[in-house]
Amino acid sequence: MFSEKNSIYLIAGYIVFLGGIGLYLLSLLVRRHNLRRDEERLEQIAEQLQLEQQATHPTNAQSSGTRPDTGTTAQQSAAQAAPTQN
Image 1 (cartoon, rainbow, N blue to C red):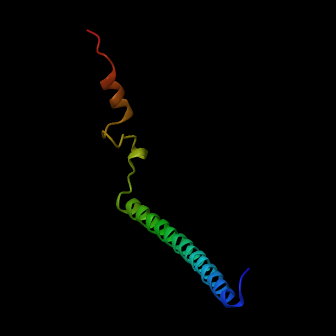
Image 2: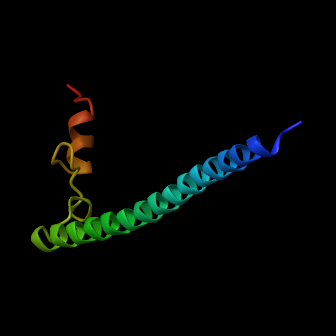
Image 3: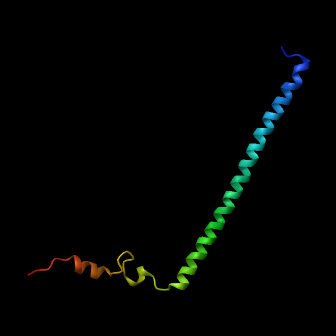
């Protein structure tokens, strides 16, 4: 079916094809490695920012009982929401 003259091109084609697949898989491995490294760096940065915020703002809105969205305590919110009786 294949002549000796054409078989060299068939083998070369397979080598090029498999080489391309190999390079693609290698690039995927490198990308995955870089993604994991970047993820670790972002987690470290987030932890550092969190520590810096805690150091600069030692009073936490949740520990003081104030609601972060309104700045009022739960008791103040309940008093405002309660209907007044006349």
